[in-house]
Length: 172
Image (tube, rainbow, N blue to C red; front, side, top):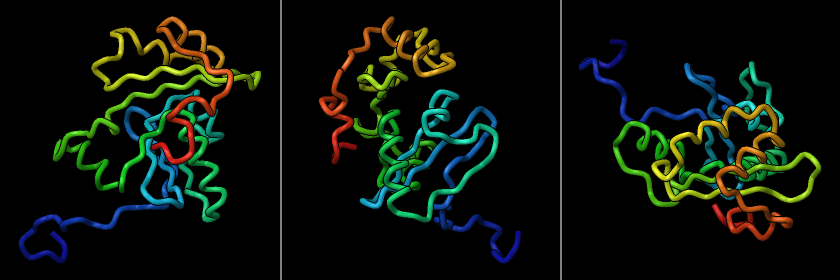
């Protein structure tokens, strides 16, 4: 087992902080690294990838430019990415080492009409509150279609996105 005589795994190996996209067996996870600290993480669908202007089939790296990375993080917030103190906190939840906090449990779903007017928004306290057939939202092929499906679940339209608390600067 390598250079560890007892064959155990190393504790707290360093985590990659350069990945933008991580493709897995069932989809893709996107990471953003705001200059204010922490990490934004979102498991995305095709519509999210289009909104984030990411290649759906090739892995990408974070921007070395802080301004560009913060701009990317602003776009991630617009699709409901969750802020974590660090990647290890997210991994701990994935592994069941700890429970999600109320803030980490929120399900924020945004629909941005392509005409540039306003935003549709759904907020759930946790995944258990999602309607049983909510997967329809993720079957949308573009953002306008997502908005139409969101309306079926009672989405609220905000003509001014700045009036959505979760989109204001400083809100994670």
